[in-house]
Length: 374
Image (cartoon, rainbow, N blue to C red; front, side, top):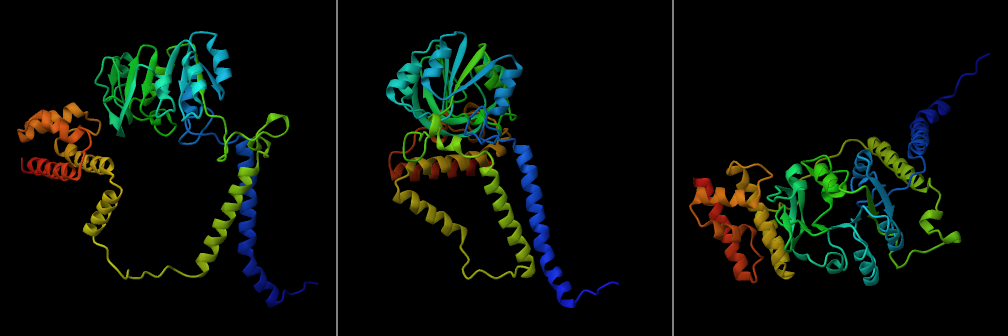
C-alpha cells in the first residue's frame, strides 16, 4: 500500500534539493580536481616546474625536447657542484634572495651565465654590464647582429635596460658581454608569453647553446626571514599534505556556488543611477595631482610617452612591433622635424623638473596634432 507524501515533506524537498545538488557538485569537483592534481604543488615565477601563467615549465619542456638537460636548483652549493661538470648555462631567472658572498660564488662558476631582470648584486653577477633606466614591456625588434636575436626576430622585451661594450639588442633590454647575457625582463620566457612573437626561439637560442642548464630558483622563504625547517630538515610548506590547496579551492568553489544560488532567489539586479557623474577631465586631473604629490616625474613621463606612442604608431602606418628608429624616422618624414629632437622627446631621459615635464607634454601634443593634420 502506498503512503501519500504530505505537502509539508514535499515542500521541504523542493526547498532543499538545490542545496543537495550544490553539495553533490562540490564533492564531484573535489574528487576530479584531486585526481587531476596528482599531488603536484604550485610553483613560482619563472620556475621550470610551474605550469601557471607566470611559470616556465613550457620552456623547460622545449629545452628537454632539444636534448638540453634542465637542472632546477635552489642553492648555490648545488649550482657550484653542477658547474664543475662543464658545458652548462647558469640561469638566474626569478628574483634571487642570496647574499653578497653567494653572488660572488655564482659569478665564479665557469661557463655561460644568463641574468634576468633586477637581481640583487647585479654588478657582481654581471660585472661588465651596467643597469640603466626601465622601459615598458612590449614587442620589440632586435636591431642587432646577435645570431639568437636575428633568428628570433621581434620579442616581448623591456623592463631594465643595460649598457656595456658588448652587443645590445631590443632597445638595450638584452645585452651580451663575453659569456654573460643580461635580459631586462623574463616575461618572454613565461608560459603566458612563450608562444608570442619570437619569444620561444629567443629563449631556446639563449639557453640551448650548451648541453645543460642550471636553473637557479629562490628557496621558499616565509615573510619573516629564513626558511622554517621541520622534522628531517623539511620546511612547513613541504610538511603540509598535498591536498590542502585543493581543499581550500573547493571550499571557495562551494561558497561561490552557494552565493550564486542564493542570489538567484533575490531576483534580478535593479539598475540605479549614480548620485555623481565623474567627468574624464576630473579623473585625469586627480591622477596628475597624485603624480605631483609623489614627485613621480618618471612615471608621469612614461605614461605621456606611452600614450602618445600608442596613438602615433597606427597613424604612421607602422605595426605594434615597430622599433624606436622606425618611429622616429616616420615622424621626421611626416612632420619635417629634426629626428634627434624627436628621439629625445619620445625615448630620452625623464624630465628633471616640473617645467620640463609640462614642456614634454606640450611637445607631444604638438607632434600628434601635426601627424593628424598631415
